[in-house]
Image 1 (cartoon, rainbow, N blue to C red):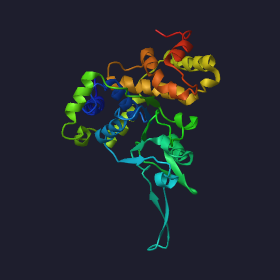
Image 2: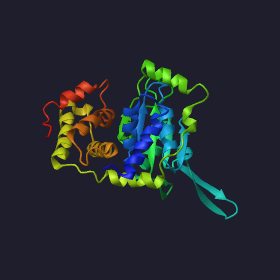
Image 3: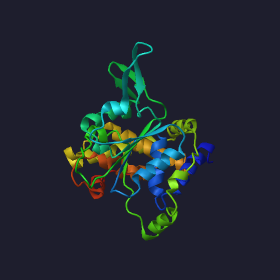
Image 4: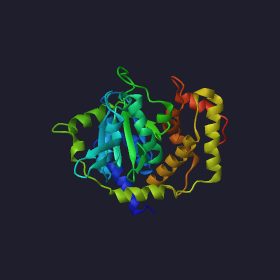
Amino acid sequence: MTSNLQRTAQSVVKNVASVLPGKENVIELVIATVISGGHVLLDDKPGTGKTTLAKAIAQSLGGVTRRIQCTPDLTPGDVLGGRYYNFNRGDFTFHQGPIFSNIVLADELNRATPRTQSAFLEAMSENDVTVESDTYALPKPFVVIATQNPMDQAGTFPLPDAQLDRFAIRISLQLPTRDEEIRMLQSHIIDEPVTHLMSVCRSDEWLQMTLEVRKVSIHPDVQAFTVDVIRAIRLHLGVTAQLSPRAALWLQRIAQSLTWLRAEKDYVTPDVIIEAIPYVLMHRCTGSGLSLEQLQSAMTNVKVPT
């Protein structure tokens, strides 16, 4: 039976899909990642709707949202905040940066310098930030939705493996079909439909969803299959696939979240693990031009549990 929380999560998917026709599968996967507490990297050409998707998700979910437009002159202090002298009190006061939000939209993350990109590392891994000698907890829930353009590399700084590994998934929207593009034109006659989206979920409900996702049952055989897939890819691709244990953890978590969101079963099946593999593992494999066929080839001898 579908719970109230599951219906709320499904309404978030429908709300976002209302401004991005034909992208329901992508939206479902991104929402499943966000409600599981995972960070999302939207990687696609300009004009495909990356920022629109991020804004639509932020407006559909409750909580505080801030956007960071990444540029080469952005500093770590612009992201984290810093200490400023308070003349009234006669001491230094910490002023929070935009990272202190429930949803952080990091637009064109790869245009920030490596020094500024590193400001996101602790936040995305440990849900807190350290400024000078003090550590500050980030609000819960906390998710980074970042975009990057893989085509125009002028003035960009490739995301290091340590940064990529902190994203639960990387996904592309791809170009729309003819009918989808016509529907898009019709919906943009007056203004952008994303500006009219209303929140359909409170931040406390979102936090509860994160807890519910982790309760979805996964059989030890399916967990063993998940690990076998990771190890087979490592062995097959060698140094090209330096998959960390975090890859296996997120493969399991995304499968749990998709299963919970769809409300069709109360346990994870191998099919959902296989469905999540390209989005969870591809960006963690460092080989140039790595294809889905190579991943599938690496999995050929892994036995799928029944």
